[in-house]
Length: 285
Image (cartoon, rainbow, N blue to C red; front, side, top):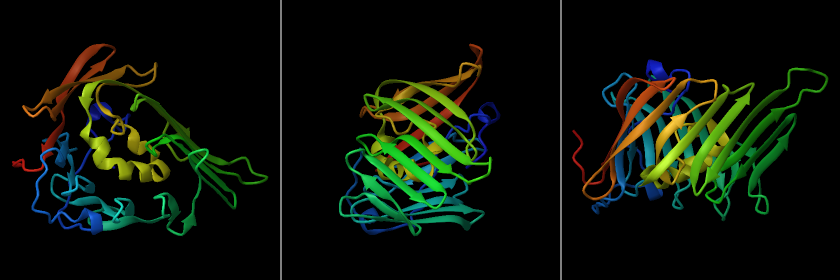
């Protein structure tokens, strides 16, 4: 992950990155000559800052890579013909640091990641397994996105058990709050409010969100899994900082720009561009 601006260092607010056009896979082939102006081409987060990251999307509107403003690759996503993510690779200084290979069953449910088998309960809408000392469970909502995640390592006869847990509360398809704690996770508590503007990132990243529900639940800490665009983001009652967001809508009624104002104890501190949205057919400066 990148280092965010000083005012959000403690929050680890999730930022966005760029698509490299060299990634192709089955349903992710962006060689089509048809341009759909309703699909994302790229989203730049914190543009013009040292923390700028970009997400780029293929002709099907799917997120395929994340880079920084120098086009250095940070993360890649490869899809199958059902638009499931079958490979997710992270990079540092151009070299891969993590590579996840994912397989699915005929119902597009994850069955294996890097040789580890995952069970799925349709009645509970939950992934789970117990392997040795590790017990894992991830409950999902109707979109296949995590609502409760727990990973527990029990070491018999020892007091240093390891537990990581996240909880997500949704209402009308919008993430109202998330909280996380544990040995392998920084404690986090984030709350959101939303307007009526449709969030194009949810559809564009839904396959990624389903995978990250299992692999990286703190991926959700900016509210991109919501149906609508956020207007407010706050933290625990002990945290004085919060952020409000302004939305610029294009003539075609799509979000074009998200601005961010930062407050501490209700006092305005700074403002910046949170994200800029480019759609297929747009000319990117």
